[in-house]
Length: 372
View 1 (tube, helix red, strand yellow):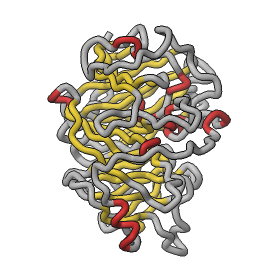
View 2: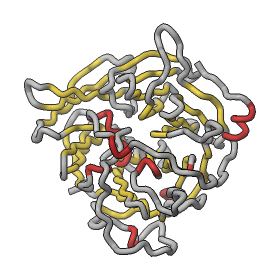
View 3: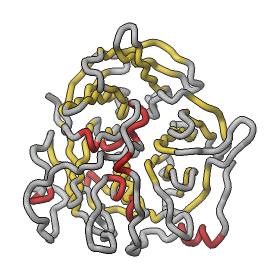
């Protein structure tokens, strides 16, 4: 059921577009966590050793949001560089606030933790180090639109893993530190907190890591602590539970897909799934080529085409298939498994394009991938 916080916290949450003040960096255990199964790598942290930086010392100058990326770029790019954001704490930039000893900590979960396009093609980015969601307009060179601050408690211990946007523009955040889902209006005003226990059917959220909203306003939360996907009605009431391997993307019929690994055939099979979680026809199969290989659905576009990410050490690729399982095109992606998390590869459903994000502690680069 929905629990609305007291007035003091509501007022603090309503600091719409307020710039976040520097704070003492929290010690994170991201370096010790390992990638889990396909659906679980959303909240998996990067490996302890960061990728080697190139380009020499960080030049402290303004970077363009489009075009040449300067010394912040990752080379080579796997497609067209859509946008580059300099690390910093300005309201109109992605970035991290520096630690007390003036260092920018490595690790994507200190900075941008999730990227998602809404149905209209607007980009929402969780800038979790600054406790805000930054919104950008790709139609205008990724210009800054607004930000939503989400302080959730006096000690600022929130850790937002993912963001979702419904058809009305309301924004939902998965906060694993406070074990709840925050809902904001399209204007950025706090509306509700979702995920309270509803015994005996629902004991509450444990580790919410991925979130989505379907065409009817139902809210889906992948809970890695409970190893399940929980469903909440538009009013926030608990509405049921789905299998962990259910993909949280929806086609024009409001149906989902589910991935199953079959040991007998050594392959992953993609099944269509109804709103109620009933498995329908198999539409696609991917053979296993390496022990560490895994498969994940990263989005569905406005044509109902499905984007599958296949990844293993040193090799990440994306295949676009139709709703009937016919391959359409393939894309090469960056070969840095350290950054291999769910929404660092994401789909713009309106433009029917797929993107990858790279981050090296100095800047954030968004690449629009090109088909092979």
